[in-house]
Length: 603
Image 1 (cartoon, rainbow, N blue to C red):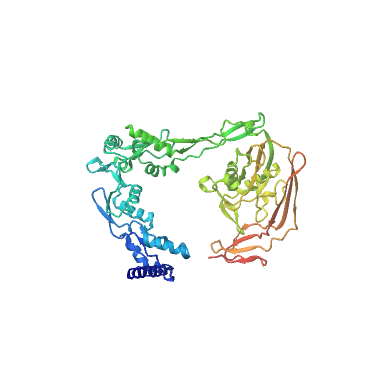
Image 2 (image 1 turned 60 degrees about the vertical axis):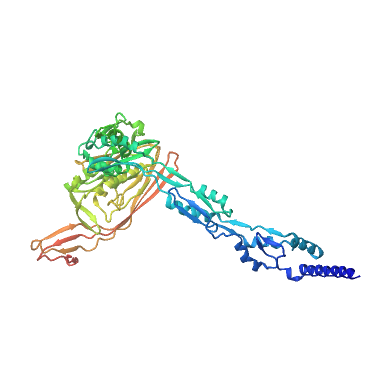
């Protein structure tokens, strides 16, 4: 009886314990806690919340303890912890994985699941994450300390002459191999030593190669280098000499296409030769021609001449080729610049076959100085060829108007005065060129009228407004050769009859030119004369400086038609001539007329 009671008591106690365990495993206390029996490697988590378990996770692996040693090429040692090299535990993911044990079911199924976890246990490994960039940065920092570039052997010049300075090999840490080796051992809990892989970098220029080049360098610097022109022209500079000391500063030694190159540095040679570009440049000279009306051929009046430019690149190549071969007397390389118009060209080639138009003007009564300037100015255009599509610029072809060019002093219009100046009479040349372009039917791009009427330009039946003035560089006369044929300009000065002519030769296209006018407004009186006192003149004398000219507005029109009668151009050239009073200068004791405007000279 007693034995039976003991057995029943034990069974009851077991049932109570089972009920208590079931209550504990199913109770609300474990809903937010780990189930007993859950381990993170050797650390129990049962009964802990995730917040309470976090410090234990971080203690599972001693990631902060240095246990990885990197060994350098000279035995250097650097210790790192896995944490230093970017290895860390993903705490959230690890705890989330551990928490799933015993929390996936509900009711009795949850009880069975939790009993099994409690009875059998569940060991969870930590989830590790690796920041590769951090490991790469650590290895790169070491590489910065260990890497060194290869030093080429070189040739130097000092007080003792040329000598070879030996080169040194370089080295470079193979960072990719080092990071790959770390990846393989980072998760190992035991200490590890890794030797850094190093690539040795040989010099591009070895000591042996430098020794071979030394003899070449000695040949280059054996004596001075003299640069000359093979066919010098009158006035050419040169020769030019580079001493061995200067060349030593230019000496270059480098590997090139797997071969050793010794010579003078191209950049420094270029700096030396560039100032010679302007000194050696020669413009080509175009031939100039006259048209032979009897034969229809061109007769050269000025020969053509080939121009010249220094070819720096070719000269540098030649210098290096010759000095390496032991030659120290080197001709510079020049290139020819051909003229546009050689004196062998024919009228047929250029489309110059017949007379196209004539412009003329008269300078009767002009001073000898003015006549002289007209002759010189006209000569600048004699025999000139204007290409198809080219715009003729009077100022461009006239060039400088200076005493050095042979011009004399005569009267010119500046502002509101007619005063002595170099080149008076050039506007006579411009006016004549304008008239030739007008009658040839070329489009006139730029033309300016004079400030006041000039009597020379109305001689020969030309009315006011058929003139053109120039004043370089602001005021120009320009027209365009809009035909497919070249234009030849021929000038003729008939001093006996005081006549200047511009004759245009080309190929006619059937153009016709209709001149309308010029028409003029009513004259505007010149106004009272102007008298300017000059105390340096003899007593009672007066000197006339300028004549009076009435003002007016003049309009010259032109209609240019093609061979079919279609209008190509319709032009209207307006000239506004201001009234121009007579001007005098008088001395002491002279009394100007009552209507005169008295001007006091400016000190």
